[in-house]
Image 1: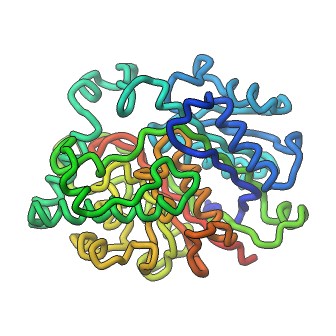
Image 2 (image 1 turned 135 degrees about the horizontal axis):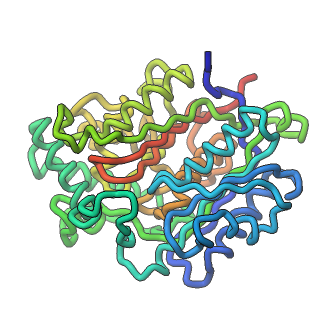
Image 3 (image 1 turned 135 degrees about the vertical axis):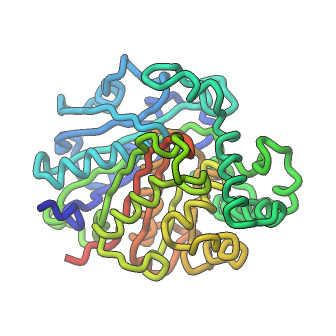
Length: 400
């Protein structure tokens, strides 16, 4: 019987480009920027990488739908390279491919890299999707801010939350992310904001204002993974290992008007439960040390904190306002600024989240460094509240 991948894979090295409006760089430059940091950190030669996974969601770096942009840009040594895409969860999907390849014994050292050049698409938000395999009304009648604003309305209705109280809480989520992002030299947005500024910002889709929406950014991030034994043989002594990696994909029930009330993400609850079991975590509120969640909108972070079982049902507002998730709180969330301020180049976001946890576990986070983290969790979401994919990764120090 399958027992999962806990401690079967270690992160050998990671890298991340500066995120932001990178008019100075094309996708290839960003990929190279992240990869060079990653390869130096791993302490290996490029020809030691045996397989790679490449994540990107939009057209600007595609050659058809192939992985050629990664192989050609990095001059990889004629190894298998696979391109993956799973909406905004694409970065974690690339990581999952590399991790599973090593855990299965198919290869010893694998690479995962994600990139996106969203600023070059000409859209103020995410580019409009084509029809493809999805029903046309799925795209034509739904905008991302509109869909997540409906999530906020459903949450309010379910928990009987006052409109102003919810607005204040999601505003505080954004204030926290800006405080953290201001300490991150690679973040897109590095300015602190006040709660008053957030509350009085122009409305995008009620209750989501300008500061409740994540940055539209360019960037790349990558990881090289191997087994703990190989990492030790290469001289690595302080290892960060993968404790769990789970993916849950909607099957359409949420939008079928069954018992789902629109106030939460069913996929997140399912994936988180599987991940905790795989990692051996019984009480996430007590055992987790750091969270990097998919805060495409501030309401998404608030709801996800409950979906992950860290805040109780209806209790995230109190925890946010009490500072439970602040940099000095019990479980810092978005210590690097999150999607909100680090930015959200779609193909890179999942790997960027892991990059921050990796730095934290190795004591390299500088001004953002937390004390003695035990387990860190990333939550990477793609799609809309009613149809989505959700990846959960849990990493920590290798104790073997």
